[in-house]
Image 1 (cartoon, rainbow, N blue to C red):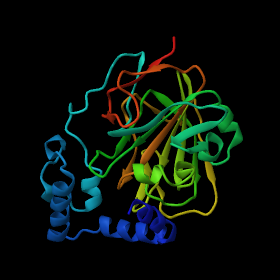
Image 2: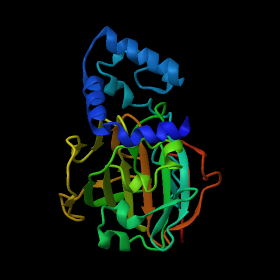
Image 3: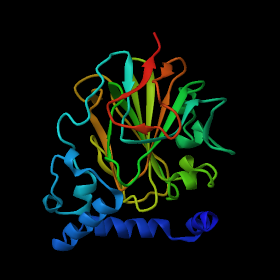
Image 4: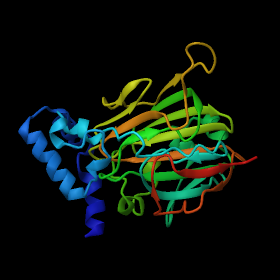
Length: 287
């Protein structure tokens, strides 16, 4: 059955299916929308007591519900200046060193940082010998993405690609999954050097957004696009630790890259399959 689930993904019209679901998720359908939201809450056992608006009726569209805000104080931010924090709610897929430009995906599978970053060699060189972490967001999770450390945006890249599922089963069976799917790469300059936040699309992910540019996809592109940003002056985009930087409409994955010698060690408990909560300690900065 698992092999069949993976095999079907190669033949399904994933982009068409995803855009159709996106239109439905954006529709204001009144009682139908509310009933779908109620079903989703039951199906995935979502704790709505954490939401700023706990009532399903408060959301006009499924997308509004899926990207719901949390109540203030629900995700306290670790204020230790030596600690980077988790950017999302989810689960660690993998984390560790970038070895000879290769990133571990799952048993038997690696992909390169060069491919992940849209074959931008200058960008990949900045993370040679550094560290990575891949975090999977399940449908039940909070889907806003926050900054693990204060940073100033220097570059954004849109990379076209497939829309395979990014769940653990697919990660174990589809080679180069995260460097194969459509994605948005945001590179920030931080006190510990460059940091890449790679927002990876997936089947039925209707949209990837950033706070500075709005919706990046859809529409789906056919070539790599890059945008450069000033890192000084009045037009520089600087986001504080814990500040929102983007969001997914329907679940996906975030891959973080850090430069060589930026991190001292991952925080206690940060390992594959560990549950993450935005704002909790993720890694200690190297002195």
